[in-house]
Structure formats: C-alpha cells, structure tokens
Image 1 (cartoon, helix red, strand yellow):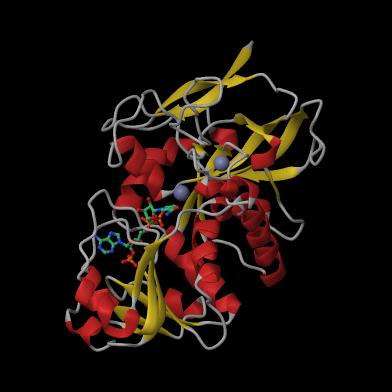
Image 2 (cartoon, protein in one colour; image 1 turned 180 degrees about the horizontal axis):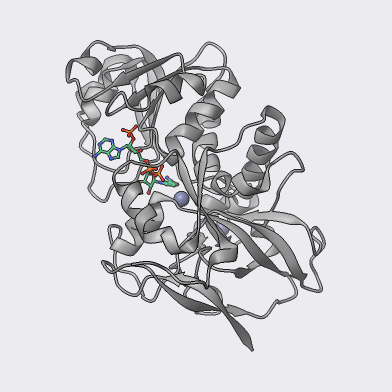
Length: 353
Ligand code: NAP
Ligand code: ZN
Ligand code: ZN
C-alpha cells in the first residue's frame, strides 16, 4: 500500500517542471510522515534535473530543503510526535553501520548516503524530494526545528545552512580568522551569516557589485567584484579560509593565490566540470584545496541550534508552486535574494511553464 501525493515533477532533463504526483510508502515502524509546508530551491535541484551530474530517472521530483509538520509516526518512533515542526535535508538513509555513520557522519557513509531525491531507496524505488505536499522519512533523518527558528525561513537551513556551517567549523572559522566567501547565492549568503556569527572577519567575492550593500549588511567586512581582473591579484595572501560556493568553474589558481600561509580553499559549489589546480600554488604557503558535502545528522541539529541561538535565518523569496519555472530561470541568472522557498500548500494548484 502507498499513497499518491501532489508534487512538482520534471519529466525530462530540459522541459519545464509540471504538476503531477509522487508515491509515498506507508509509514513503517521507524518512519515519520511529514506534511510539507515549505520547500527550498537549491541549485543542486537544477543541476540534477538538467543531467549535469549524470543521467537521472524521470519523472523526478526534486527538493532537499524541507520544513513541515509531523502528521503520523511509526510504532517504534521515540523522538518525534504528531504536530512537531521538523526538517529534512539532503539525506533520507545511510548504512548506519560504517565508521562514518557510527560517528554521525552519515553524509560520508562508506556505502553512500541515500539522497532525498533521485537515489535508489531501501525498497528499490527512486527517492522523490520535497517539491511535494508530503513525504515519509526514517526518523533518524528527520531534524527537530528549535522553537526560535521561524518556520517559513527554516527550509534552506537543511541544505544551504549545513553545507556552509560544516566546512566553516571543520576549518576553524572564528575570531582571528579571515574568511572569503566566493559567490553570494543561497549557500554563499548563509556562509556569510554563519561565519560572521562565528566571529570571523568575512570578505565576499562576488562577480559584480550588485550584492555589495547586502554583503555589508549581513556583516561582511569587505566585498570585491571579481569581474575586475585586477581584484584577486590585489588580495594576494589575504585569507585563511575560502568557502567556494560557485555553481560554475572558477580560475582556481587565482583564488588559491589569495590564501595566506596554511590557508584552505574548501569547495562546496559543484559544477559538472573537473577543477584545474596548479600544485605549485599549493606548494607556496602550504595551501590546501579541499571539499565538503552537506553535514551529518548530529551536526545538522547543532547548526539548527546555532542558528536559533544567534538569530540566523536565510533571506528568502516565498513563491507559489505556479512560479517554480520562473524561479529556476532566476536562480540560473544569479537573480535571487537569496533563496526561493515554495509554499507547499500551493503544490497541486498547477505550474506555469
Ligand atoms: P546559487 O544560489 O545559484 O548561488 C551560486 C552563486 O555563484 C551565484 O549567486 C553567483 O554569485 C555565483 N555564480 C554563479 N555563476 C557563476 C559564474 N559563472 N562565475 C562565477 N560565479 C558564479 O546556488 P546555490 O544553491 O547556492 O548552490 C551553489 C553550488 O553549490 C551549486 O553548484 C550547488 O549544486 C552546490 N551545492 C553543493 C552542496 C554540497 O554538499 N557540496 C550542497 C548544496 C549545493 P554572485 O552573484 O555573488 O557572483
Ligand atoms: Zn542543496
Ligand atoms: Zn554508513
């Protein structure tokens, strides 16, 4: 037995998103059924549907920034109850037995975590994501939303928030560190807010000066427009940590040159093309070039508590489901301040192509 629920569906890599349904399994002993209230739009949703990272199985419903209310719990669910406000991010499963899983790093599960959409689930079906009215998820992958987190802006924390929180913590952002955030979109603006709250000195490296005033308002100490080719040269050896959130390839060597001794360039942006790195740029100043993907479940809960404590919320543009195709176009143009969030109550009322 299973239930079909309203969803926004991609039927092809290139076509517009359409109205449709997805099938949700019945609630098992450890499952939670969530009525989705808000669904964030991540650039990864677009990469995935467009086939940037490999072939997909269609129809596909994407979305891995989910905020909703628990509507039903399985018989063995202990930590959540009907009516709780909860979130689901990029993972809905992992092996739960490997060293990484046991250490709470399910995002680095040796067997690969089960993505919230487009992955083979434990029952052999393809997972379907959050652009829908409800979802059934194993309790372990459901996050409790702290009281102080506003519901309508919570969803982007589940991907954009944790994806930037994790590398900022891992590589020591805090008082006395100089952090550069490259690209100020959904992830980038969260990186700025989080790094400022951690006490770091933050610089935004954006293509143009269009987001300068916003960057400074978010607490950045400086903003530079990288469309001027002289800008990066003038920032030689200025930063301890770079968080690269850009969805397209970059001139990596030019950014590495801006790192001081022992500096780290941590990449979270995921363009389809491989990056090109000069080892000589790494030899100089013992720089590191690395990456990070989302965060484990305990760290995601920690991030939510951190945001609650520091009053951090994403900047969102709330849209109806009917506007989703236009929203995707605007994400591709870098024209969103700073995350679209779909009001899931409107899913099922039709999508404009
Ligand atoms: P987004 O909102 O579109 O932001 C990306 C930003 O990158 C844009 O706002 C823009 O910032 C900059 N940018 C875009 N095209 C560029 C270009 N051609 N050259 C230079 N800069 C460019 O996307 P997002 O949702 O934040 O996601 C960003 C990337 O992270 C995507 O590739 C996504 O798939 C990936 N991601 C990775 C993880 C992970 O776990 N590692 C998790 C989530 C997302 P400016 O206007 O300021 O220049
Ligand atoms: Zn995402
Ligand atoms: Zn595992």
